[in-house]
Image 1 (tube, rainbow, N blue to C red):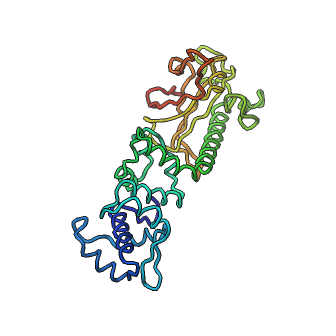
Image 2 (image 1 turned 30 degrees about the horizontal axis):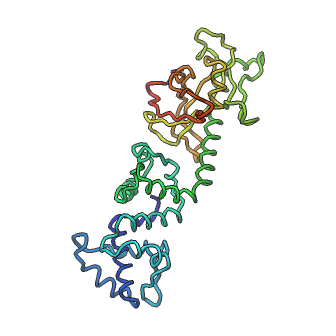
Image 3 (image 1 turned 30 degrees about the vertical axis):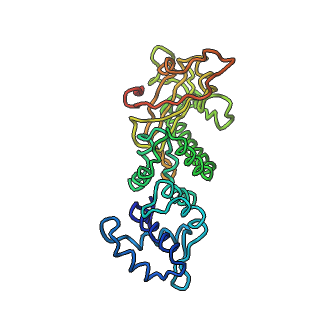
Amino acid sequence: MGKGTILSSGNIVALWQIILLAKKYPILHVKTAVGTLTSTSILGGSLPFDGGLKIGNKYNFLEIKSGNIVLMESSINKLIPLCEEDFPNKSVTRAILEIVLKNENFDWLIYFDEDPDIFKVGIPNEWIDLLENASLFNFSDDQVTAWWNKVFSRYTSYKEGNNAKVGKVAEQICFNHETKRLSTFFEDGKYSIPVKWASMISDKFGFDILSIRGNELKHSFIEKDKIRIEVKSSTFKDETKFRFYVTRNEWEKAIENLDDYFFYCWTSVSLEKQSALGPYIISANQLESLIPIDVNPNICSWSECRFIVDLSTIKINL
């Protein structure tokens, strides 16, 4: 959750108690609130007053003026109308978390996925607890979907920009990998460099890198036969749940010749270190039977297909 983390279920309950107390007593000194709330039996013991106060201050739920606690607009207009109980209900908890997420750049949001098991892999444990307590992993609930949409209304450009950076790093690593793998083909100057970074020229090719088979991917073909590579990347370390998308444009290019189209998958992509693990190579032939078929393309046709694969079982070893 990052340095200086103050979010926890206990601290949220403490914040809520402070808000209710400040609503009841318009002039509420911090020392009075401390004396009242630290002796409460809520949570079965001493309430974490300091943690609740820090959340309130940091995210503008309240402020301290001349030693008194003063509620801010977000508490008065957004939280209090949702609940009058001692414990914050789901609506209040969700409202608090929404405000927090809209005021912070939490990198783990890039791992968002409507499959909770996949999503949780990239989330700090503290946030898993907070989101579970608010039932925000229940993606079959329309209210939950609407909540996430509101959160991501701010993060869309950030997420897309970060994804683009991760993708470019993976493409660079893949280009370097292919150049090194095929170095024997041009070390004596007999052949021109066979690796071309296609997506740097245009995104209309339907693949990222143009290369050649070399000895490793020769099989029954010729070493100098061209291959087309689509780079897929993830910052996740877990190769058993690698997620990637195949667009219609990519697949239409792949089916022109399934034998020479490959997906190079890279895990653990690091923007900071400019590094990744891989490649885990999947041939287009391996995916052919899994791609959806348009039964009636005049009415409905697919545009993007999502795969979640165990790379350890499906990859081609070089």
